[in-house]
Length: 89
Image 1 (tube, rainbow, N blue to C red):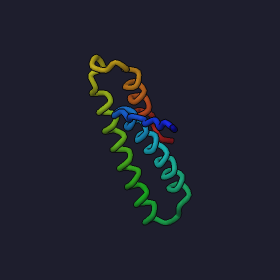
Image 2: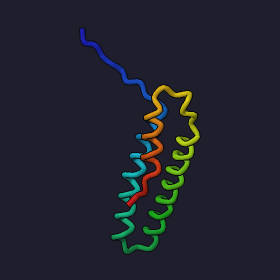
Image 3: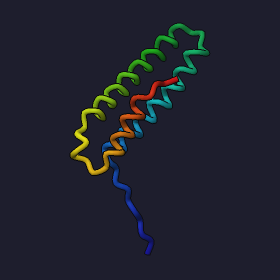
Image 4: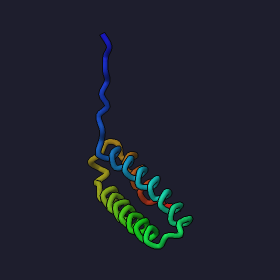
């Protein structure tokens, strides 16, 4: 009989993945903005970039508001704080 294992997901893990996706998409947007000549497209890309930046800031606020004393794995919170505070280049 083949056993299947399920992975449980944590809230902090989900936020870490979301920040990684935001960072990846932000990098793509920056590249597209840099090499685009269409003003309308650049405007839409900047709007999307601003929305992603706002979401990343909200995640950082969530991470810093966690009471680390109530978590057994405070390193995951510290990791989330670290990756959500990095700047996009």
